[in-house]
Length: 329
Image (cartoon, rainbow, N blue to C red; front, side):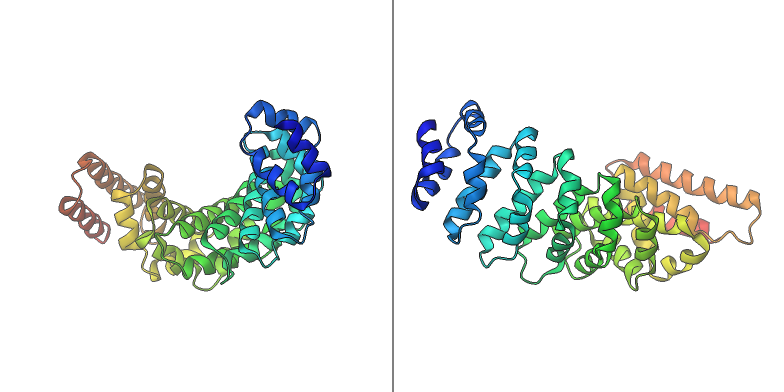
């Protein structure tokens, strides 16, 4: 079958090429390796230029199949000049082709040696455009966000990402979506990664109108991981300038969600929520001794909450109320 696939990909008509590309997925790893060594990526990439969407889909599926589990093949695919073709395909009329192209971009971006090439190709701006497009399929949206997340592991790409308008796009997506959705969870995870790596991104997020309220709403209604990312961003904002943002964060009603998160969030969320609680406490007129007492009260009540373990509910609510009462005295 290998020889037949190679022959049809190189010399067959359009239909023969499509069938050969589809058969490729049935081969074992060793057979696929042999095909790659024989140079089948060249005709597969050439098929991406076809005006026949069926040929393009078959080629994309085959290239994805060859890239799974092989960093070497991911690098080869990029070297064969696939990136500008993929970017062009992201503007085509076929939703299937767009989804496959985004899936290919996501897979290729997982390879460290491809990241700079992908960012330099102009992909970042196009991917950001998919975050908020009304015509974007949910899976395509998730793939675009995941690809950008892959690229954030390369610090050199962060400034380019920030200048692309990604901050506003992510905030708009989070604002307009159900806070517990996977889209919000992935979007706010990407936002936390970016703002934790870029001071300018943190400043832009903090100064964007409604951003703090969006984060507060995510703490209240998001998924467990979404809440964790949201409190992480708020903590970074407050740490950047407590005097500037403390009142703004409190005004947007963060306390109920923050206290609940302190009681029932993930381990990381609890830790960050407690740290943010201390920053939000107004101790400007308190003595050093008074501040220490407040800190000890929070730690004491949090220890009690932790000790409750799975017995959450009315007891947790009582402990949270007790915290508020003690901190207000």
